[in-house]
Image (cartoon, rainbow, N blue to C red; front, top):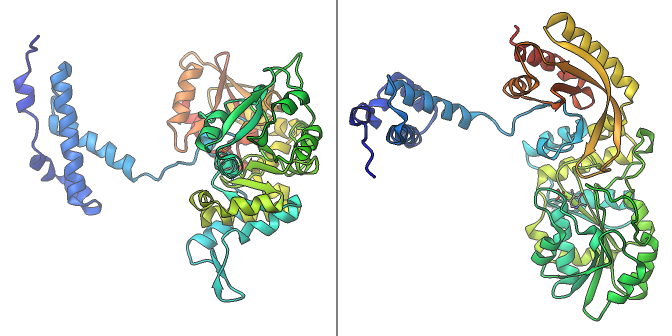
Length: 465
Ligand SMILES: *Cc1c(COP(=O)(O)O)cnc(C)c1O
């Protein structure tokens, strides 16, 4: 069916040249190439034309409408991103918010390394080509007691390990561990990409040592254990102890690989997080190869660490995929600095660990102070209530960390949704939780230096200021 097109509105559209001759365009041309600006103008006119044809009607001042559209695109293009956000959600290792914030030593290392030349692959002592993995290898080996290498992330680590050990062979995995970690990371998919086949054993809730034993055949290249980090099964469940599995693997001369996910290197029991296994526990139990992330409980940059038997780690290093999955100088500088903090026991220098260790009492003092400030200065009805922070990053699924939350009740004018949206639109954006139509602020993940910004964002979110 033919739709009648409002010709007058289409005729009123400006030409690209009309727009380019205006004052606003001259300003954009001072810092953007002419073709870029012309492209933005054409696209903006095109959008207005489509909206007219779709029946949206013309603008009273099409030139202004086009200029406004271009201006918001120019602003977006030139704003640095990813942007800093204030994380008031209480999720410490929030994957969508960049997981572990880096500590001072790591930041210093990055800025010193990145703005100048560095010894990334240069052996200063001998004046010749050096090894990229020398930078973290020795520290990791000192901390873990096994040789180790770093790749781009834990998914890459598992991919490389399985490709090297099990290409064209079988890997045995318990059905209770075939999990999706989030973001579409699934073990069967990684296995497929590594050209290894999956042999599933056991039942979803229980897998016995015997299940593994009877599945081992001539094509079996590895046993894979996965730390089921983001969900928990309760009830009639069970799986063999790591030590038993290691013994079975050793007797069959097949390597046992464990994907630890979070890779806890520091004992977190003082903060009540007792369920995260330590990397060294796995290695001591006889696991041949462990893999884990650099930006979860290690508290460093995005990376994947592979540690284990010397002969196996040497094979991973020689696999051509290691070159494809290697980390850059920024990562190595930050990882090296974070590992120095761990080795020297400077855990308060690693933000993720420091935040995990804050006690409910510490947080209660801050929450009370902040709630008082809000009720005194803005039209918020703020209380302090008990709640739980979350470690996140696929660790300790059900274990929360006791915290004190600032709870904002809705006002006559604004619902919790309104406040949440206004906070996201502030600069820097603030990310909060909503529960039962109340906005909840968890100061555990808000740095003390950010409290004034948070306060200002809340005042303007409430329509004050
Ligand atoms: C987080 C996680 C991964 C993925 O790690 P990335 O570093 O994000 O690639 C893999 N396995 C487990 C068990 C995890 O928890």
